[in-house]
Image 1 (cartoon, rainbow, N blue to C red):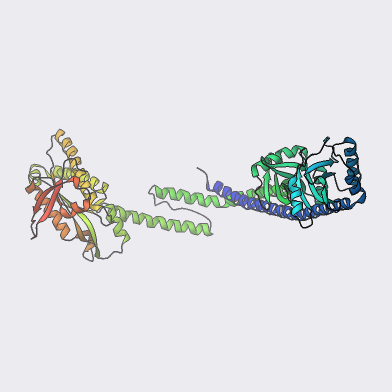
Image 2: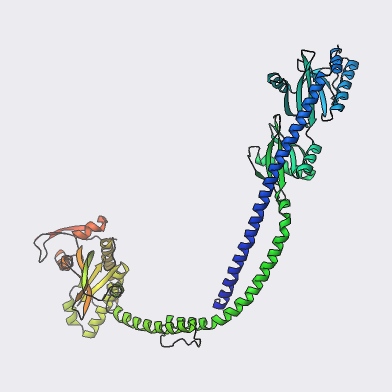
Amino acid sequence: MTRFRDRLLVHLLLLLAVVLGCNFLLVRVVNLENARRTIDEDLHSAAEVFDRVLRLRLDKLRLGARLMSDDWAFRRLYGGTEDFSDPLQRRTLVSGLENYRTRMRDAAFLQLVSPDDELLADTMETGQTAPGPFAFPMLLRAAEEADDYTAARFEAQPDGSLALLVAVPLLLPEPSGWIVAGFLADDQLAANFRGMTGVEVSFVAETAAGPQLVASSLEPGLRAEMREALDAAGSGARGLFDLSVSDDDTWISTWATLPGGGQARGLLQQSLSRELAPFQRLEATLQWLTLAALLVSALLAVWLALGISRPVAELARGVRRIAEGRYDEPVVVGARDEMGQLASAFNGMARGLQERDRVRDLLGKNVSPEVAAELMRRPAALGGEEKDVTIMFTDVRGFTGLSEASVPADLLATLNGYFTELTRVIEAHGGIVDKYIGDAVMAVFGAPVETSDHARSAVACAAEIRRVLRAYNAARAEAGQARLDTGMGLASGKVVAGNMGSAARYNYTVIGDTVNLAARLQDETKAFKVDCVIAGSTAARCGHPEWLRPLGEVTVRGKTEAVGVFTLRDGAA
């Protein structure tokens, strides 16, 4: 058993720990919110820079391709090529494209496509020795439908790289082919964006197998984990979303639409743990301050607990004495503060409890515990209230002969043993013994504590009395004593229950026609030669007709109308 001082100390420390812990958590939550807010702002700004730079690259690429399309020398070179499968003429054409690409500077490669979507020349050195199909005819169809007869798209190249392609028509002066210029979205471009914006940039291609990380500013060791995180998250996220990698780091991410469209998007990311790194020192300092505050608080709590525990311990000893029924040993506390006042009030309470228990003990020996509780609960006044109850009367048959054959002391012992058995069964079924009348017992079910199944409880009680008396009489027979046969009468209905008597002395009891009927039915047990007669009013409320056997009707003394009666079947309840 822990002492009050220890509990007080623990509670104070727990309270302080909760307060400091909440403060620490609050700081952490605020830091986390600030970090997320900062990352949100950084990603928003980076997305704007990302879009402007890519659009500027696109405009420059488109302008360079248009200038090449209008270049007289290149148009003459293209128009003078008769056989595009001829290696010499093909190398000459590729050389012209490469010469112009070096002047454009923003173009990573240039391609020449025929009106029939055949790739005629390519500066990327694909090794193609003859015209072949152009890999991205959708780009050309989009250019044909555009007002300015140009189009741009991000497309995944055959080698797995990602490139922004711009298609413009080659006019001689009529459209005679297409110039396709492009620059690669590679690791270097992503690294350049990171240098400009401070956030990680990745280029993601949408494939049938899901989003694929094509190029990125991330470290090589982190890319595989990021690919797995992208596969798990999918590409349907909108706005800011979190990606968790295997080392428990969270990357706050957002998608950026690439100019020109196509099956590719930009992924802008910032590591939450990196953003939170500056706050780690603050959290470490708070941890040390928390430990120091707990230590100082523990010392103060010990000092405070020592000043309180002694009088509290004395009060605890006084409580234990009262629990043991010893009210004559007062609590002694020398303090004159609130603890002293508490001790004085405690001693007064002890005296009141001693007086109350004396009254309750005396009352409990004269009435049932339920009646005693009702009397103590209600104001001490005459009066009653109407209640729906079940009344049971029991009577010892042949009591006159038994009393004549027994000395008074033995007769009283026999009755006390008999009443003890009946009272135990009655109270076990929720009834109370209203009074003992010679060898008779009057019991009430449903008052003073109201119950809805009082009739069923009374019938079950009668069946139990029958079984108990069999065992009781068997024990008496073994001891060479006479049997005690009992008749029982039960009736249900309205009665008046309350304090009745004179202003100076009264009892809690019930009166009414139901009481008289139960007493008369008990007398009828002899006429019907059964041990229990139950009124139809009780049988109707019982709810278990299989327990009962009808006896017919009887007109009891004092009534003009016949009453339907029943008795218990063998083995009832």
